[in-house]
Image (cartoon, rainbow, N blue to C red):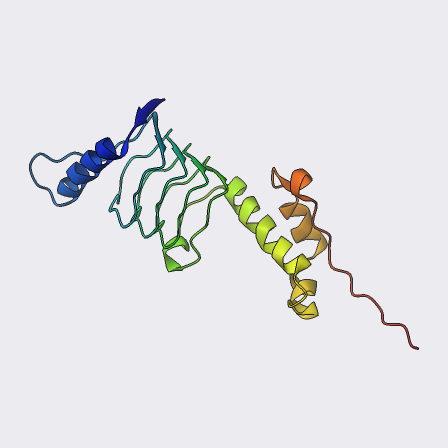
Length: 174
């Protein structure tokens, strides 16, 4: 992996913006085999960029436009994705740890694989299981044997603790 700093990143983003506008001195952003740490991509436009086989640690992607970008085989650790547009991103074999997932319409059409779905499902069902403010009806509908079995396939389930299917407790009469 080749390390890249903020100045080099800014130059790649400048040329990519020109590429998107079909202007001269333009170049599609490519981060293959690059390692970036503590860089700011907030509000950056990296639509259709190639991030394949790159590593990003403690980076700020908040409100970054990654629409249609190639994020296959990318490692994201402790990155902020708040408000990031992931529509039509190819995120197969993406490894995310300690990252925020953007809960807005810009992530609804991201192209993810089973591992990412398992990670998001595990976290969602964990919230359902442990929160006393989730209704019994919703717990009963979501914490089924099948969905819990699937969610517990998440690679960190053993470390974090397995989710249990919901069982309605019968109240005893006093």
